[in-house]
Length: 335
Ligand code: KG4
Ligand code: ZN
Image 1 (tube, rainbow, N blue to C red):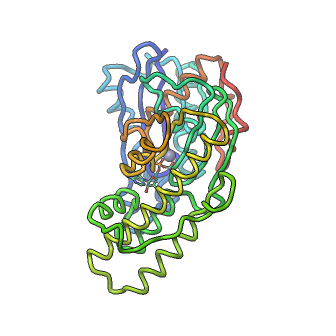
Image 2: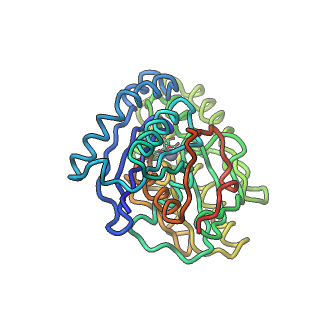
Image 3: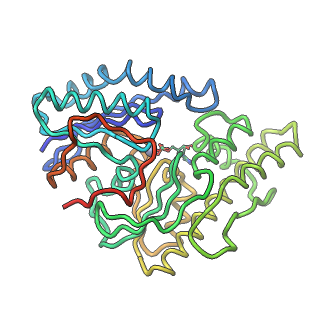
C-alpha cells in the first residue's frame, strides 16, 4: 500500500511517500523558520499562508523524485491535530480532497502519535508495553504505550513544553529562532560550573513537570549580567540545557522505577538534542530514538502513522476535520 503523508501543523510543510512493503520511498520538507525568525517565533497566519503557497509545488517535487504519480496512491494521510488550526486546515483540505479525487481512503493523523511512532519507521519496535517520552515545541508528556494506538498519559508538563522553554530562553539570550538547536550549539562552548539552574518539580513525587520557572530564572540571570559576553551567553545556555535534560532524565528514570516499563521510546523535536540523547542512553535500560531528521516535524512520520491506521481499515469521513487540542488517550486503538 502506497500512502502519501502530509504535515502542516506548524511551521514545516512536510510530504512523504511510505510503502507498507518497501518502507519510506521519498520525502520532501520545506521549513518556514527563516520567515518566522524575523518575529522570534511562529506567526500562525503567516504559517497558514505559506503552507498554501508551498504544498502543491512540494507534492509535485515529491512525485517526481519518487518516479510515481498521484494515481499510484492507495491512501492519503494528513495531520489533523493538534496544532495551529489555520495551518492544519491547509494539509487537511489538500489531503482529503486529493484522496476524494483519486477515490482512495484518507486518514487524519494525530501529530504526537506520529512523533511517537517515528522511531519505529524501518526499525524493530521495543516489546509492548513500553514507555514514551514525547518532547516537542507544544508537548512534554510521558506515556504508557499498551499497544500502537492505546496510550495512557502518565505525566506531563503543567505549563510550558520543553521545546517552548528552549525557544523562549534562546530569545532572551539573543540566539534567535528556533531556540533548541541554537541553545544546544551555544551550550557546547559553555562552562557547566558557572551557573546552576533549578530542576523544577523534581523534589516532588509523580511524573508531572514544569518548565516555566526556568524561563523566569533565565530572565533574572540575563538581567543580572547584562550586557552579556559571548561566554556568558554560552554559560547560561549550558546551565539551561543541563536543567532541562536533568529534569527529563530524572522523570524517565522514575517512570522505569515506578511502572516497571524497561523500554523507552523518545520522540519529538527536543529528542534531536544530543546531550539529552547521551544522558538518557546512560540512565535508561533501553531507549529508542528516531533518526535526528525524523525527530522534528516531517511528512514521513505522518505517512507511516497513517499507513498503520489505513491498513487496519480506519477511514476518515468526507468532512475535513482539524483539532487544535486532541488528547492521545482519545485515539481509537489500531487493529
Ligand atoms: O516536534 P517539533 O519539530 O514540532 C512540534 O511538534 O512542536 O519540535 C520543535 C521543537 C522546538 O521547540 C525546537 O526548539 C525543539 O523542538 N528542538 C530542539 C532541538 N531541535 C529542535 N530542542 C533542543 N535541542 C535540539 N537539538
Ligand atoms: Zn511536532
